[in-house]
Image 1 (cartoon, rainbow, N blue to C red):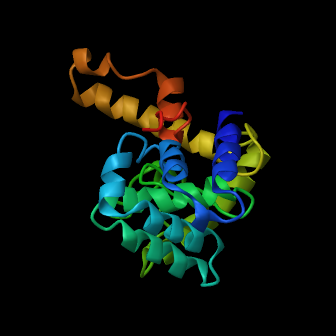
Image 2 (image 1 turned 90 degrees about the horizontal axis):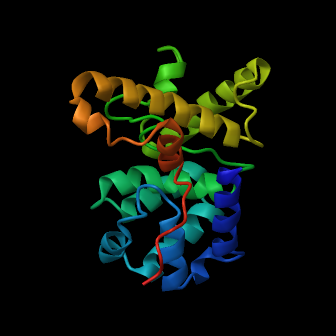
Length: 213
């Protein structure tokens, strides 16, 4: 499964000590993430590769509670709010998929209260919290519930662990995007959109990373 390959490669890059990542390894790691793949230089103009490696290490293996680690990592990237919103969840999930889940804006946009998770859960599922780190825990509880229900229904069995749920949510959001854009935009514009399988791959960041430079 392609998301499993992505996870394996990201774990190989990170290794046993994420704080020791050199610039080339940091660039390659960012190349596996949808929100940073084409913006590696921009990210490294905001935070140095050494600072980012230290931040990744603290996020993944630090001793502080997870919400605090999550918020501290986001703070490194406040000048790039979309990257700050998506990158910590990508790193946590794909480097340690047995313990952590994926949270990106297409899964749930905290500001707009939209995203794939909102399309498949009721309004009673509370995702809001005082900090993004606490919201990450709330998203995890909702993902666990979706995973359990999905396995019973058979629609999250496309991969091991939460990877099947990732694919399911990406497909849900891909259909939503295609439908909304198809209604709002011209036929000429929507024609350039990738078909659903390609859109799902882009959302999940499943691709050959950009070459190192």
